[in-house]
Image 1 (cartoon, rainbow, N blue to C red):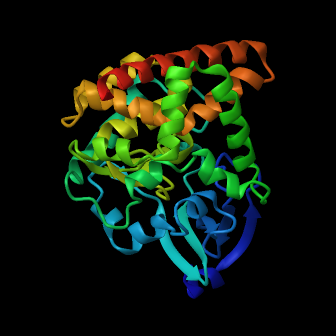
Image 2 (cartoon, rainbow, N blue to C red):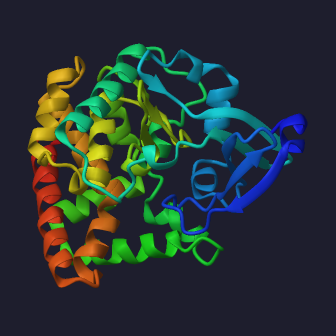
Image 3 (cartoon, rainbow, N blue to C red):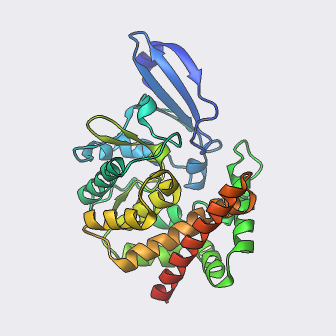
Length: 321
């Protein structure tokens, strides 16, 4: 944050218990003119996305390089300023408040259409011209793999421990044909990254959940670009499905169909490979909920959800063979 802006802060509130789980420190601040902003402070030791992504704050790089200034009409970012202090980065953002859906409500088909429109507009704008600050695809695909998380267990952020336990449950619950393929991918994500990179690629946000976007009056604002990467558009849709489908009125199949109708760069094979990649990314979370959720009804629902992803993975494996 620039010194002049920092000097004008008259009120601070640390946001504990926010939906983000990277470990970054989040504050809501008020300036002397009443302007409200959100400040995210990230360091390699505290922020999981920075630590697991090679110690680089890629969101700050995308902003400082001007890449986020190239976003198409109707797609926004919230960054006002970025300040680096040693290995710490403070990212100052507009406070979008309740325009961030989060997990507090169900997203309508119309709202989902706005999100998909924004997603595909982003993809069209950066097709074949991805900023160099983007995370390498193989790094993004291995971000939550056991070997990436294991060294981070025991730190201040509890998420790596949850990820490791989730993968234990995953390999207990999932049949060996899919489980073995996921384990092989964890050991070396380069082959799948290579196949996906052979398809038309673009800038992907790569973390599009309902906690990482805002439905503003005139645009859809994408938040937290820390793991943005270079890959086929289908991967953004797969990530959105994995993290947010339960909070949208459309079914998973309807979401895929609506995305396919908008996307100029997605075919069936690429879509299924992206779904496999996302199972290998977030399968730990789905297995953990299917095995350990406090609510029996939720455990049953998550078990059905996990089965759906495993079925899609089998289709991908048949195509990848």
